[in-house]
Length: 440
Image (tube, rainbow, N blue to C red):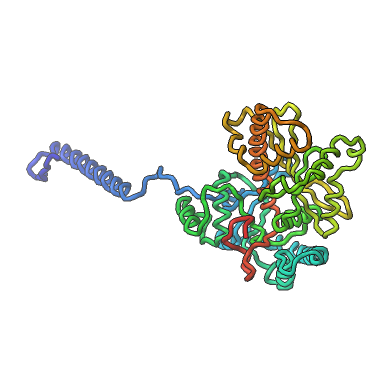
């Protein structure tokens, strides 16, 4: 910068004016440089503006007033009466959205008393129907007794960990959804009681859950029933939940149906040689009896279930066409809605073709005792020796059926886990728990 010497007395008036203009210009330059340096220093101290916030597992709903609700969206409907249904942790809502939390809490309390009375009546009826044929240490009866005691405590229904929230279309301005893997982690975080799980970075949440023994890449959706308030529900919805709960405990409520035969669904397997030739002949003869189709064997099977005070049964139907082009498995949970009247409640159907499997599929079944028993049974019935090529084709079809059955069972099991009541929770009174869904 040029040095300026102030010697106005030595210059004539004209030169003094030039000097003053030069001084003003120099002052401006100094101020501009200083401002730029100061601004640059401040910017260097700030975090980069484009740095993204850590990813979380929560879903976000932006309201018309600018508030943001963090939770789990359970349903979205469109149209003039469209709405968003979601679950919000009560402590989070009361800390961040006090006004809204108060409104939601009052709406919940309005239905809790009626729901508690309804639940008492239904649990009492269930216990009366089940206890007569249940063992002394029956898990469901013990859980019912525990629930009846807790329903007598006002604190049980007054405050729950999660709040179901209903937002009308006019209340919502924006919605951000998460993939199912992330929402599952959020639910697990709620069940484990992790603090501030809504804002916890996704990687930290995964580490915390793995430390508690959960598989972060699993596909089972946990049940949040123990964290939710009671609400009045239609009779059919209650019977569906009761049926799914019975199926989680009673192993003899599952049957397999093939054509006009209904057999117990024994997951552990049972060698077919336990069936003697005479009983096998009787079953085969039924397939050729013209009078047999007049009475559905499933009707009598379900009646026996109902006579024991049960309302649920899982029927897995196997359908294989004569050309063995595919195997179709249809798994249906049936619910008894009164007397001997049963209705299908939830169904999962899967079809698999043999050409979808590798060429070597089915070879591992050759040494299976049940398969050998089946081939021996056919020959014992006097139907002749089974040709090798037909055996190979049958084995391939067996592998196809096995795959379809596995997929269908996994799907229906997920449905049952979602429906069932929380009978496997800690009986100490804690509504949450660390168990894996559907397992004791």
